[in-house]
Length: 381
Image (cartoon, one colour):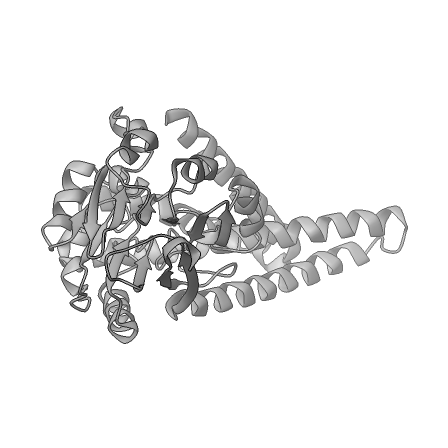
C-alpha cells in the first residue's frame, strides 16, 4: 500500500507540475503574476488530498465542498494533460516541418491553452450531467432451470453507490424513486455502498434516505472493496443496521428454490488478511439443478463461475472507466468491463454503477440502476 500511494502521489505531482508550466508558458499575464498564479494553482492541486486528510479527522460541510472541488480538479487533470500532450505532439510536427516557427510558437501555445481549457470544460460538463441523471439499464435473460412455481423474477441491482462527501441525500432519494418505479421482486446491492471514510456517512446518517419499495423477495447486499477501505468493522454493521442483509460468503434461497450466493469482496485479504471462501467451496451448498445467482463485486475469473455452474453473475466495481478514455483501459483489464456476456450457460452482467469515486463526472459511462428480467424454463421447454 505504501508503494502504491507513493507511485500515485508521484504521478499526481508530475501531472500538476506539467499543467502548471503549460499555463505559465502560454499566457504572459500569468508570468507577470506568477506568485498569485502559483498560489492558486497549488491550492487547486492540493485541495483533494487536503480534503481526504481533513475528512479522516473530522467530517464537515467544508470537507464535502473541498472533495467536490478537488474532484473536478482531478477531472481537469485528466483532460488537461491529455489535450496538452496532443498539442505538444502537434507543435513538434509543425516545428519539424517548419510550418510554424519564431513568433508563431507563443501564439500556438496560447491557442492550445484556450482550446484545451474549452474542450476540458465540455467533457467535464457533459460528464457531470451524466453523473447526476441516472438511467435504468434493462436486460432480459432466460435461465433453463426448474423452479417451484416461479416462472419469472424481476431483479433490481445497484452497484457502487459510494455514499460519502459527494453522493448524499439527493442521490439516495433519486435512487429510491427509481426502485419504486421499476417495482422489482428482489433488490441486490453489489458492493461499495459506502465510499470509504465513514465520517461523511454517519454525520447525516445518509443510508436512512435509502427507502426502497417493499419487494416480495427482499433486499440483499454484498461487500465491495470500499467497505474494507472504510473499515469493515464499521461499514458492514452500519449497513446491516438499516435492515439490509449483507451476504458474507453465504447462500440464501428465494421463493421457488432460486439460490443467491453472496461473496465477500476479494480485497478483504488485502486489508484484513482474511481469505474469502473459494467459489467451489461456496457452491457445495447449492443445488445446481436449480437456478444459482452469484453476487461478486469485482468481475474477475469469469471462467471459474461458468465452470462452477453459476447461472447469473452480477458485478460492478469497474465504473466502466467512469471518464473517457479510461473505459478503454478497464475494457483491457477485465474480460467484461461493462454490459452483458454469456459464457457457456452462464450469464454475466457488469454495471457501471450508480455513484462514483473522485470527480462527479461520468464522461465514459452513465450512472445506472440495473433491471434484469429473468425467465425460467425447465430444461429449455
